[in-house]
Length: 299
Image (cartoon, rainbow, N blue to C red; front, side):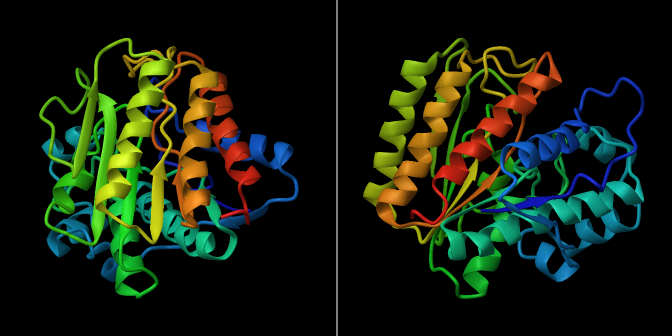
């Protein structure tokens, strides 16, 4: 399986910042130890022209040249830096590379990505460029596919993805998220399922199974981009749901099985994870990657 990483491109964050930047390096190291046979690739750079498939050129220019206002930087949650721009381009390139690799191997993984709060003209919630929206549109533009489904299982609704792709009939957006969590004003995905605080494994998996059935009843994707958020875990600081690690494993297997059974390539991005202990978040993401590897070349 091809695994694309971008952890050498690091944001210089102030001490005490709540975004767990170090998890990406720790995750790559854990995956290298667990899957020595995997093919690791450094994330490629994403050009302005490709970013413009989902973002306004003025916004791209202002991000690239440090022209974001203080208010815009607060909404993103990161101070502007050249490293922020480079990392955002690379993380997007990693999802694009994972999509291309998935056509060869059935499944591929970006060890970052899932920046689903980025809108066409602004960033929010630690998200600058929307990798899933960009990658989806690029796959269609390159005529690799006609239709893409984005299955967003981060605990937070993919509001930026929903707003960017609201009138794009080639891309189906599914978001299963916590109702009483960020963003507090939700956008409208093609299908949204808002879960109550404390939702546990059984209810979550029932909702997911039903949502996937509904997706395929109305849409026939040629590619799935799966945002496998670790922040639905019961010990996540920003989550509000109560899934166990076993529940997350069942979630990941269900999505991969659906892709395999229907012969659909699947590109996986890690999305959010803010565990009380970073080692637990890394373990959850690692579990996702190991499960994905077991499906490699089987779809």
